[in-house]
Every structure is written in structure tokens, then in C-alpha cells.
Length: 370
Image 1: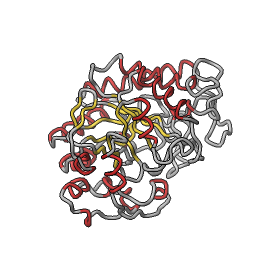
Image 2: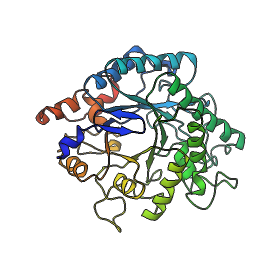
Image 3: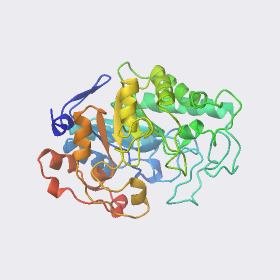
């Protein structure tokens, strides 16, 4: 089967049947006034479902902690009004034949780059009160804070199941709270949520996964998004070797993770060049653990997301790398972010062979809900 055929072949994620291998990756959108998703937000997601996207992962949405978000108009996943807005989103996507999961998010000690002076209703939270630079800027989270945050993720997952979502994703990447607990530089705790090893510092994420599994139905997919790099250093690795990666991911599988969404600047770059000069992070996850691996990072584009956030456009690029890796089974699903944000019909154009109509990505797309 060719890579193109694989892309449009069905896939089963726990008890969820997907019509193809394309996942709309989460991209932060600030179009939910006061944290409440609007009818326009619902229509935005419905358009992608109508054009055949296999699984939609929403923008990051804040769990029930006062400082879970770093922008005022990013959606919340708690409170009657916000949850009613998300129910509309689910209903619209399902009416169009789509499948959708929310990305549950806590930003930790990470102000927004686009609005660094905005402050949440309570101080930002982090494992040890440290900013990305290592500077102490607040008090460490207490054990009570940690326990309530774990519970907030579980409550959000239970609400997602109740309101008809098809699963959930936890944002454990890109320097946000869960990722901060992984970091030896930012997590200097001496209690059971800290430790000298990556596995020890992963207890917070493990307990979130276990708490979610206890409140959602059997078969309900739980995805964990991870990145290897550390804040302010794209070349660093949390797991220094494949062996450490295997133990790390295995702990999450044991706790209830069904899939890993592995973020790289460019999905095809080797995760461990000293061990294999071709295998991506998603490829290593698939090889070592065998559970569902989602590759993400510049699919269909020639520039990475961080360049786009800095105002640089990205040209449409060949999908040959993607097809080749799907054909050899390196990973299971492909996360597509900016290309689908720019063009709701991106996947349908690929299906119909209209690749000459795949446009470039311009940062102006961030400012609209097209």
C-alpha cells in the first residue's frame, strides 16, 4: 500500500474508529471571549470535519485552576458557559461526521509571547516557582496545589466524556506545566513530585493519567502530547537515549496513555542521530512501545511553527517524506497544524490529487477563524 493509501486508510485508537490517518493538531486560537467558545469557534472546527479530517484535536483549553491560561480569550474547559460552548462544538463536528478531542492545558509559569504583560487572576504556577530562565518568580506549588491540579485535569476529562467528546489529549509539551515537572532545571522539588531522574519527575503526569482513567469510560482514548526539547533549547533532550525514552513512555502507558503525540520542529528529523540517523521521535515511540504514535511538526510546509510565530511565512512543501514514512510504518497518524489552520480543505485537496492548489502559510492566518 502506498503512503497516500495509508494516509486515507482507517485506524482504530482504543475504541475510537478513525476514517483516515490525519489529525488536526492543536493550535492556540484567541477567539473565545472570556474563555467561552462561540458559534464561530464551532463553525471553524466543523469546516475541518466536513473536509474529512480524521481526528480534530482542539486548541489548548484551560483546566479549572486560576492561572491555567496566559491569555484572556483562550477557551476554558470548566464552568457552565464554557462547557455549553464546547457542547456546541462537539455537536457541530459530529453532525459533519467528524471526531474531536479537547486538548487539556495548564500553562504553568509561561506567560504568552504575544501578550507578556497580561496577568491571570492568580499568580502563574510552576513546580519550583522558576521562570524558563531559571529565575525565581513565585512560590513553588504546594502539595495541595498539585493535588487540586491533578483533580482539575480529571474533572475536565470526565466533563469531556459527559459532553460527548471522543477522547482527550493532555498537553505535556512545549514548556507548559506538565512539561515543567519533567525538567531537571525547573523542577527542583524535594517531595515525591521531584527527583533526580526523568522517571521520578514524571509522577505528576502519571498521577494525572491515572486520575483520568478512573473517571472516563473504558475505551475512551487518552493522548499525551510530548516534546523532547526543553524551554529555550530546541536541541536539548529530556530522554537522552532510546532506553530512557522507552522507560519514560512505558510509565505513561502503564498509567493509562493510549497514544503519544510527539512534537518536533520538523517531523522527519532524527530524534537520536547517534543511534539511528533517520528515525523520528514518533518513530522511536512506535518502535519501542508499540502504542499509537502521532508525528507532528511542519507536515506539508517548509518552515517550522516557531518561525511562523515570529512572523515568517512557510511555503507548501512536498508530502513525499510523509508518504514514505507512513508506507514503512514508522508512525501511525500525522498531525497537521498550520496547513489545516490556513485551509480547511487541505486534506480534501490532497485526496483529490490537487497538490498544486496547496497554498503557503502566512502568519496572517493566526488572526482569523477561516
